[in-house]
Length: 432
Image (cartoon, rainbow, N blue to C red):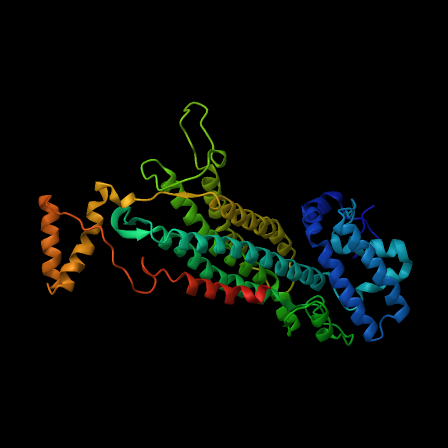
């Protein structure tokens, strides 16, 4: 027999139930701990406004603690015929406590109940992503410092251009992550608002203490307007997805670079054999499969904001069941993002960087700008210096001076790792 909180004495068609519930039972298991957390805060508030007695609250709270313990131990399941996690928790309380269990829903709807669960879930997921990003950032900063004096070619149009360094390369991806963290922090602040008390999107005639539940659940503030609270469903997911896509863009670019740098035609970096894969036919191969898979995963993650936007683009005001489908999209995305960040950090622990790359004659012309600048510093007009060095290149007489003198902020000789690290520390602080 199906168990719906909205049951009015008839059984829904099983085909309809299967189609509308979809994967919700499986996905909702990730929300179970947050559903209990939200219910604890809600009933504590209900007792404060006289909708529950102290004795009823003292009975309900330990029962919710027992359910929470089952969730943490992996014993909690959503039974067949039960629609979602919210229904399962309420049915368990009713089975164990009788009619008292039915009282926990006073003053709320499944609409604000799922919103609370999702806000708490996203808040924790964003913290996990921030922590994983911070660990990758720390690895990149350490590598930037370690290899700041090792020169490498810089490219434009995939053509050899000017001297760069591994310090700059590692540091560039570290600082790019600080830009991504700005978006992650914005998503975190959007998620960290309390929708509880908005009910079905239009509030309640009960004198709900929304400030109290905001404090109990550790939110920064309420979603004040109850309609705006309901409208945040979809907006929060899109904000989270946009932040994930930004990090994925940075990580995907880095993965692409490493795929190239591992190629023997470049040979700039290597990884231990056990972190690469081979070929079924070519015994010499060391394939960058981890970075290739990461590049593909990150490309997929960058499609998530568009998928959510298309899903929610033409919805009218108020709750619509289409919103349920967002869980299928965004839940796997948060997991994939953390896994990729952790894998990138793990791989970079074992990277070996080649020294003396620019000693190779193929990179002679990479020093032409250095020679132009040397002439300009000695008083030669820039265009004359440019023409002189250009003619030497054309005639095959250019002889490079391989000394590099970059000292300004953010350059080869001054990569500003301390300043970049301070910027990231400021951005990570609100997540801690």
